Length: 383
Image 1 (cartoon, helix red, strand yellow):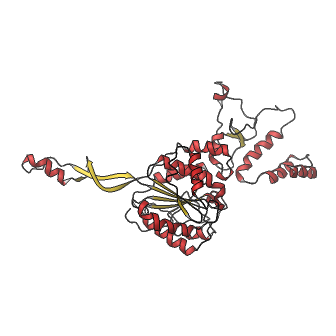
Image 2 (image 1 turned 45 degrees about the vertical axis):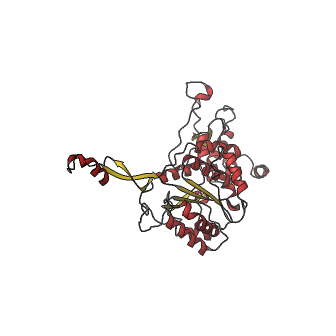
Image 3 (image 1 turned 45 degrees about the horizontal axis):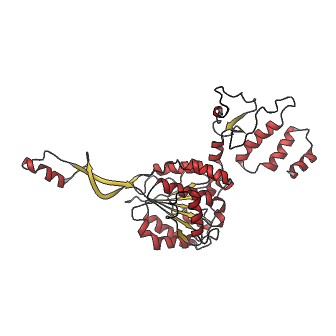
């Protein structure tokens, strides 16, 4: 604020354009903040005879926050707060200054996890608790009766004995299906500190939405936390996971952690072709060759290997770290996980996964072509 006062003393307040440019340079550090600044500036720099309370900037937790209309995309519609006022009439129209309204719900959904306050984390968890984490079912080796399908020879013979060998009744069967399991490996090293707590809420939510979920945390070593995410309350679960992980906030050894996973846990948690989610920014202090080798082992054991990177939400992100560049050669999907909208897109992506292993992959990731998920081509095989 002192910098703003100094800037105004230097340039004066006679030119609205100069004041706007100076304050914008001092206060706006992210693209998402530009719209809020423009709206606030227009409200402050209004004619002296204007209504003092014409369009207040309400707090995010109570009423809609007025922001400038986005430069890209369709303008956001104004959400009326009729319930809070008890009136059936629409609120007064906004002054003609090119603004629409984001509700607190919309602002929270698009806000970066690293900028969440404790209250926003709790509100976000309530939003995430209603997410539908559905995956395609996997076919088991067992059979079950069906109206259509391959003939069930045992039942055919049993039912037609009374018909003197004539096949008058031909029952069918099909493979029994079960939900495909999920394995989550989440990075809780120092470089992920701004995202760790919110991502643990995500792990807790997906574990409670589905029965077959295995959860692991890693920094310099791997820790299985599946039993902790079964706690009733998310705060209790996060606290118990924090006590269980002795290297929380330390360095990152992705290769060593994956080697522990492959050596100790693969036979136990990878038997039924799970979808594996690795959540990490890719910073690694270990050997890139070890990362490549252990990632390839994970890839051979799972139905789908998805890497979720919170830094991918930035438009300027480049996968320059050794760990991330190594992983991109092996993984199937590379997706952001930096806000609630990105989690919604992940849920949609999981629901749309093909039944066959190796299907539905798109082109490799590049900095010029950014898609919802980016994949490396593989030869198809069995799941």
